[in-house]
Length: 41
Image (tube, rainbow, N blue to C red; front, side, top):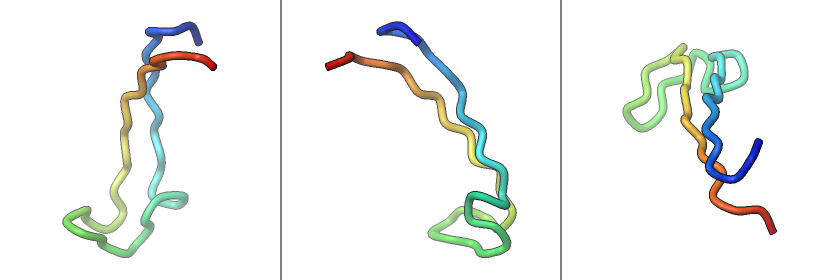
């Protein structure tokens, strides 16, 4: 990925929180993160 590139990271429940609810995140939730590369050192 180049600087400024954007990717979606999808985390299924089995590797996220699973069947346990945490701090307002419902149990068995799919977690979706949008990540942008700011810089490379």
